[in-house]
Figure 1 (cartoon, one colour):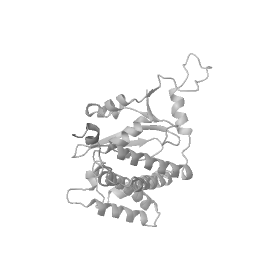
Figure 2 (cartoon, helix red, strand yellow):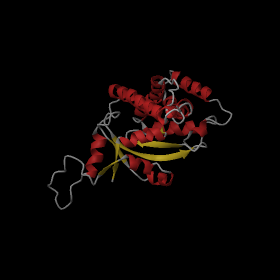
Figure 3 (cartoon, one colour):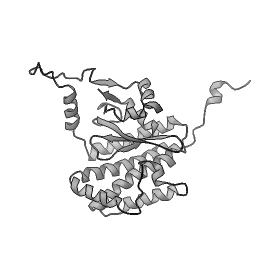
Figure 4 (cartoon, one colour):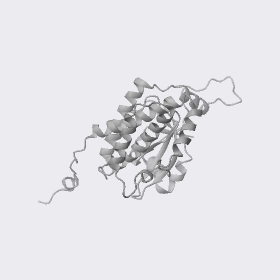
Length: 265
């Protein structure tokens, strides 16, 4: 008897260590969050150090995508080892903190490409597991070490629910009206991430739900830019309101983020 469609279509688990990948991915997020938090206390010194870093001839410049850091003849494993060496440096000067922040983001891009996306090509279910697990690890660390204040999110929401001018004494509603926030359904996600709508995505603003499974407090976010790789895959650079630098997301990561967000109208 020929195999059924179900048995024929079933794929074996490639034996990927989901938790190990998630821990390493969360490490890049953690170091970026640590340094962003510290450097935000002195934006002037931070910006000077960033400008100084990008004047260095060995710092690769270009679009914020993996091809900027890994060329056809480059070894991604060597690159990631070099990133780890940056992390192991005990120096915590402003210049070194900026370097650590830069290394965390470039390391995340390369790690996503060569340790997650390529080994798990087509296995979006496993990519989703890595994404969820790394988010849980990172959010647990954030909760213990860098609790995000609610004030920014509350201020953002207050703008959306501002009372009409003709009724100044009417208190704002306790919940956002449906006209101010639109849920992101699976059909909307497919449409948003379609090739023809990517530029429109750059004009949209979102709010991550505070009660999402992998969110601590939620908050506004937007896509600052996107980069199409030679393989045709797209990396979306997501800027959260409480961070200074965008965080790269692959399509699986974007779907996960959009699923737990609302569109701000």
